[in-house]
Image (cartoon, rainbow, N blue to C red):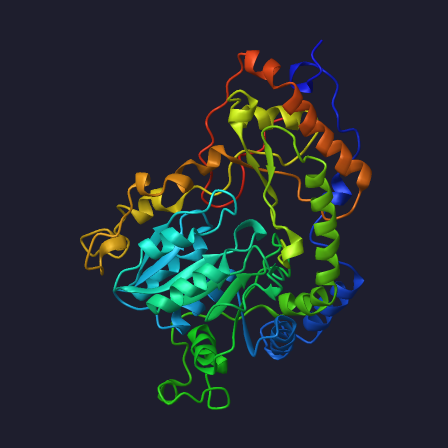
Length: 446
């Protein structure tokens, strides 16, 4: 009988991983904070939200923070704050969640996609520079899956070409790049704080910056009740007080803000435990054929924040060309949950970015206000186009459980060591294409 569980052998993982994978972590303190908001009927107020904004800004060592109903709204406010407008181009990596860039359409602007680095999975600085045109207003830098983008190179290129920098920190709240917190490099930053993220407060987002002008523009974008003379000093904005300048309501529910105030007290320590756990997991897999960690060298002062939605890099050529989907299926059969091929599908391939006429302009929205056709051919983004056959999710462990870590690692070692048995097996799996709105493939039916 084969050693592999996929082929009838015993499973490697015998421990229950439920507690190690549980997230978010809430307790009586969060419950009390939420009930206080509820009992005061303060759900739609701003007092708790403003406290949370102030504490969040202090935590990031930034001057200003503004809360929003979602990360999508916070990112839209970031675009509005730096003046993204009709005919402008926003450069963005193709491998990211859609909310990093689609809001550009709201302003008559368009995303221009660039390729990614195959190791960091973040924006490739060289390809970013190649995509810059006279119409480029800004770049959206996504710290994808918690990995810091190469901010030194990106900031130098942006400065050289007078391009504004927006950081999307939705995957990496509290992460560091060479000793400095992510979200503090660009002109502005924004991020999701929804319940699936490593900084999880319900359904919310937040914007941060150091420039008063950007802060005020972000504040008035979706906050009608805060667009008033007390907050607005910009002469261009003073005549427009009283209404949300984006025509949208972006107020965050104060139950989420209350949770945020509590979570902020424990977040750094929880992230420290996550990093200890995930680093030990990858340390156990050093030198295993076909397997590479998606992580940073913490000796450089960089970190993976809360290691949101941990992934690994796959080298099929080291395992005889074993397809990633079959590799993942074999590891899952050993008892490792949440190990699936791929991640986000490259955004430039979606019809919304190629052919859709969303606002009845008589041409695709993507090029409705551009002077040239900015739509990318897949061949021009080779890394992003192929990446879903080279990455896979791994269990995102939040609690340090050494025995479980070793069992998960042993399962992967076992599959890698017996890959020839899988090559000989006739079972086939479809090539992973990635998905538009979440990570990894659909979980297999039991």
